Amino acid sequence: MNNIYLIGFMGTGKTTVAKNLQKFLPFQLVEMDEAIERVEAMTIPEIFEKKGEEGFRMAETQLLSIISQEKNQIISCGGGIVLKPENISIMKETGTVVRLTSSPEVIYERVNRNSNRPLVQGKDLSEIQKMIDSREKYYADAADIVVDSGINTPEEVASEIIKQLALNGRLN
Image (cartoon, rainbow, N blue to C red; front, side, top):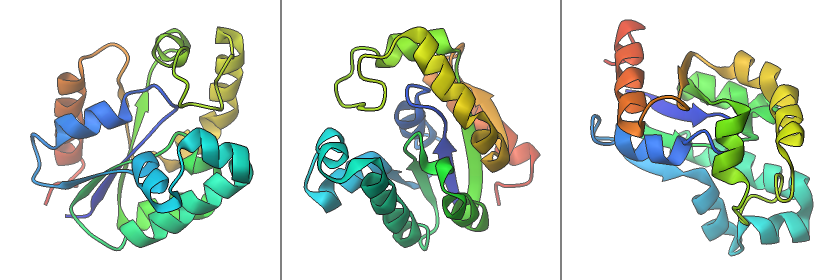
């Protein structure tokens, strides 16, 4: 089977849901932010500080180009991976793109104290809402399947993803 790419704004639970998906599928798990940190030998905040967002996005695209060549992976992507059209093309060509959504309030509660998220550090709810809104078109264009991760447990979200993959003929 092709890869499963989990996309969505930070705090929608991509990493947690990916771990739960692994309970259903014998796939390798790739957490892109962790992999970028290993490759760059820096934390995400350090990469943003030293190379800026563009430097981070370049590293993200390079990693995606490499890992997308493998199959049977659950790939938890960074929240901004959809900002580069080439990333969307790579994901669509090599797998199914699953978008996780949550309300801005749930996202804010999940990310507002996390120092490893430089783009939302010190932002209030309205600023996070603006960021989500500015990315909406990109997420919508990229997604093959959409699942709300804000109102269900990670196990329920993973189960719903498996159901949607099966209903869409993407589990073969």
